[in-house]
Image 1 (cartoon, rainbow, N blue to C red):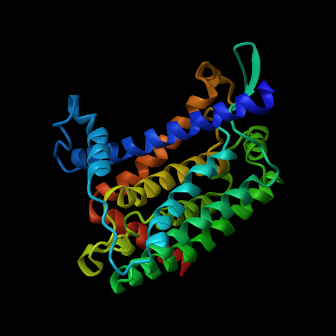
Image 2: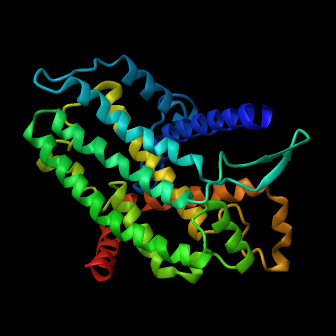
Amino acid sequence: MVDTLVIPILKILIVLNATLVAVTYMVLLERKVIAWAQSRLGPMRVGPYGILQPVADAVKLMIKEDITPTRADKWVFTAAPIISMVPALIVYAVIPFGPEVNLFGRRVTLFITDVNVGLLYIVSVASVGVYGIILAGYASNSKFPLLASLRASAQLISYEVAVTLTLVSVILMAGSLSMVSIVRAQESSHLWYAFVQPLAFGIFVIGSLAETNRAPFDMPEAEQELTGGFHTEYSGMRFALFFLAEYANMIVVSSVATTLFLGGWLRPFPSVAMLSVLDVVPSWTWFLIKSFLFLYFFIWIRATLPIANLVVTGIVKVVLL
C-alpha cells in the first residue's frame, strides 16, 4: 500500500507545491533580471531585497474584487483560466527529475510515473491549454478579447505543429516515447540530443517562445491595439491564473527541453572520465540547473536589446517560412 498509494500521493503533493512556489518566484526572478539588465533595482520594498514581493502580490490578488461582466457567460468565464492552468500542472506526471534513488531505506523513483507514451501524453495535455484562451475571449462577450483569443490560438496552434514535428527526431533517436527511456538513451549514446539534433533543438526553442507568448512572440497581448489581450475583462485571482499558467508553461517547456535535448538528470558529458568528479552532485540538481538556465534564456530574450528579438525573428523566417 505504501508503494502503490502513499508514495505516489506524496510525489504529487511535492511536485504541485514546488511548481506553484516556482511559478510565483519566477515572476520575481523576471522582474529582477530585467531590472538588472536595464540598470534598475526591481522590487525592493517587501522583504529583504524584495524577496517577499510574490507573497504581497498573491495577497493583493486574493483580496482584490473579482468582477464578472454582466453579459458574460459566467460559467465559461470562470472555467477558462482553470482550463489554462490545469494542463500545465498535470504534465509533470511523466517528467523524470532523476533516476531511482535510495530514500529512507526504500527505493524511490524521482518521477511520478513512467508510461510508454509519455511524450505523446505531454503533447496531448499541453494542447488543451489553448481552449482556455479561446473560451476566455468568447465568454467575455467583448469583441477585443475575442479577436485577441483568436490571434493567440492561431499562433499557438501554428507553432505547435513545428514543435511537435521536432519531437519526431528525438523519438527516432531514442526509439521510445517514454521520457525516462529518452534520458537513458542519451546516457547510452554518451551525447545529448541537442548536439545530435541542433536544428530540431533550435526550432523547439523558438517554438517554445511562441507557444508561451514570450517576446518577440507576445503579439496576442499587444496592449497598444488589444487593450491587454484575451484577458482584458478579467480581474482578481481569475486574472492571476492566466499569468500563473504562462509561467507554469515556461517551467514545463524548460523541463521538457531538459529531458529531451539536454540529458535530463545526467551530468554534462557523462562519457568523459575527467569530469567524473561532477558525480558528487545529485542527479536531480543537474535537472534543476539545466531547467533554470533554460528559464533564464527566456527572460534574457525579453530583457535584452531589441536586436535579440530581431535575430530570433530572422531565424524564424528562415527556418519556418
